[in-house]
Image: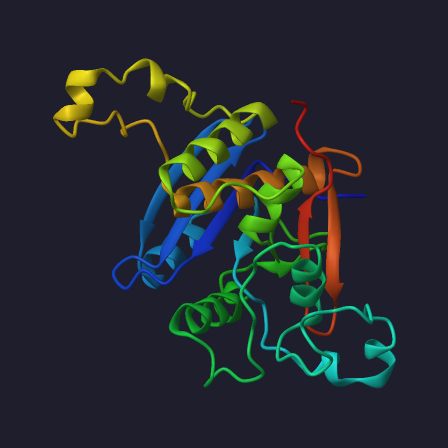
Length: 254
């Protein structure tokens, strides 16, 4: 039996030097209750302040443990793989990349990992100190799991999204969230509010358009919602040794 949660949290860890953490919270009715960004201490404070929540974190849970080098694993891989049998990445990343989903590759050591990954590793290490248990857990009222924003949008859309971080990519992802049921601003209003004068004056109506990090945090929160509120709402990719990623199972109805 799944634990019932009142809040669903999404955390995006990015390469932003000033504010690498973006976090969002939605409720069981898919209302956005919180959306912010900050440093790691801000993320700690936000997560610590939750009393009953499931959190999806867009960051590698661990370094790669060399599964891709094991003979029994290599035999299961596609012989046509363009990644090579000695690729330095986690099995879950291999599986997503083989589907065409662009995801970062996690090195085999923390020292060789980029700064944002190191911050993610630290966040996962601290979650247990904040009272969070690894999902799924039968009794803990605060739990967490690994998510992947780009892969989650891919699954909901059914194909590769527009380039992440571009205006058109942000608009598309926000439309996807709206169609999935989240109570977010209608991104199509952006086009209704554009006039020739505003365009010439560099006055684009961007106040209702979420940025890439906010969208990734929201899709992680939505994935957390799907984990426990919809039967077969999510799918698992990866291996327990290196980490399992939860993603939306069903796409949006277009």
